[in-house]
Length: 294
Image (cartoon, helix red, strand yellow):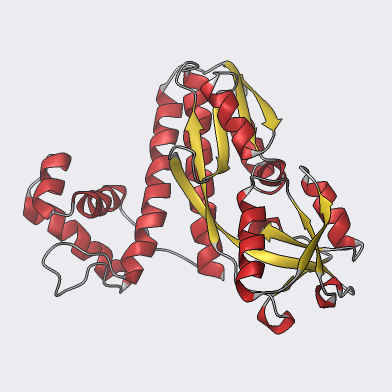
């Protein structure tokens, strides 16, 4: 049974020190004295039995434990501040169009949107599923409010949300990975998952052929489940019936991709801001929980 608790103000001071790189600047930002900031961080370390900054560094440099705390602290503060605003603000109403690839819609959003609806019953959320490049065009045209997409070369930087490891997947009880050339089920041309898979295979000289091209996650899943082809998925999209494959099956390692958020400049609303903040806090929190459980 967990009986301790971490002080919100101490977490806020810790984040301020990391973000400013200075206890002095953090104290100025927080409107407190330097000794007060130092004491709060020391208490955090005493409560947890961990050291959050490298002792020999000239400037505050987080340790590995400090990096973990930073992720959790940011998520906690976002949720705390969101709750505070929620409790002290007038009810928010409106309609928000959230665009995202169907892979993220299927595996990252269901519980999140359920929680958001409970917190903001007056906000109607429409989900628009499309490829990341298409959604960016719609953001630029102010046709949707928020885009939760994969960061890609040639697309402007967005607000970082989380990293998604990519993995090779095959169907349980099937061995399409042994075929030569290996049959692949991939997203259409111009998608980062597809590019990463083909570049990795070409790098090790393994022959491949496109057995299935689908814009939908369901099409890729069908090819995998049937044993028709091998595919590439985000680790969060793994479901029963899939088997992760890799070096033992002569498949190269795949990179991580960044999931980022874009907000339409011409569709500003309180409802859209609330949903964007809610998505950011929830997915960042979940990514650190998953990392800690791995």
